[in-house]
Image 1 (cartoon, rainbow, N blue to C red):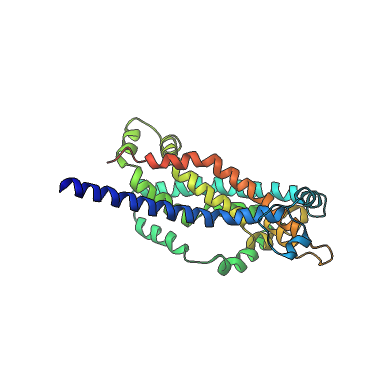
Image 2: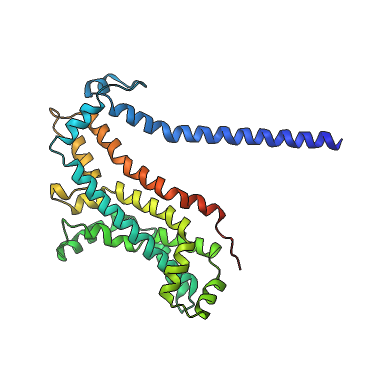
Amino acid sequence: MSERKANEQTSSIHVRRAVSYLVLILITFFCLVWFYVLFINATRSNGELKAGFTPVPSRFLLRNLYNLFHGPTPVVRGMLNSLLVAGCSAALCTYFSTMTAYAIHAYEFKGKKIIFTFILAIMMIPTQVTALGFIQLMMKMKLMDSYIPLILPSVASPVTFFYMKQYMDANLPGSLIEAARIDGAGEFRIYNSIVLPLMKPAIAVQAIFSFVQSWNNYFIPNLILKTKTMKTLPILIAELRNSDWKTFDMGQVYAMIAFAIFPVIVVYLLLSRYIVGGVTAGGVKE
């Protein structure tokens, strides 16, 4: 009887595992199929795209890339602009948001709960609500057509702060900080030498999110940047899509979108090992 029960439990485990794998395969398929469609369309001409979708690659990829890089749109400059803005934004966002979360996590002071609640309340305010006042402030400070308004505000990121705070509550024991203070380490040394290495998995995740968010940002850069050579890739893609109907080429648009995705993939591949390391995080507990 016990052997029969054990066999039934084993069979049930296999069924649940098979269902789990099936669900994961379906989710993976629906996540990746759009990339396949994108890269297939990047190999087709404008006329072929008008005729409808086919799952087989065409032979116009090199021509689309040639027309794209030799056209009036400064694609390479736009790529460098986006890399500068997204890279600096991700670095500032993760570093200072982690520092803010560490201050709330490690110190006791009056108004701590109020500050924490206030930061979370800011998350509820959409960017579009504050856009007009932000643009007026940038005009008064003479920072229009500059990267400073796109990079500097990333220092204060409530979403990243909240994620880091939750991660610290689970994986950064207060005893470790106290031990470092007893050994004579200063606060900045504790943060840079102890806290940041322990936070690598969380920092990697938030760096990817922050990089992708800044990379895909169109709304604020479109309001700030006016010079052609200063514009980022999302703005250039939108301009390419809205070009004159005589020169419009959907094949070039797909090729440019595919070209714009590669840096995001590279960033993910570089930081993915830290994300995997987060599975084993939290070995030190109170």
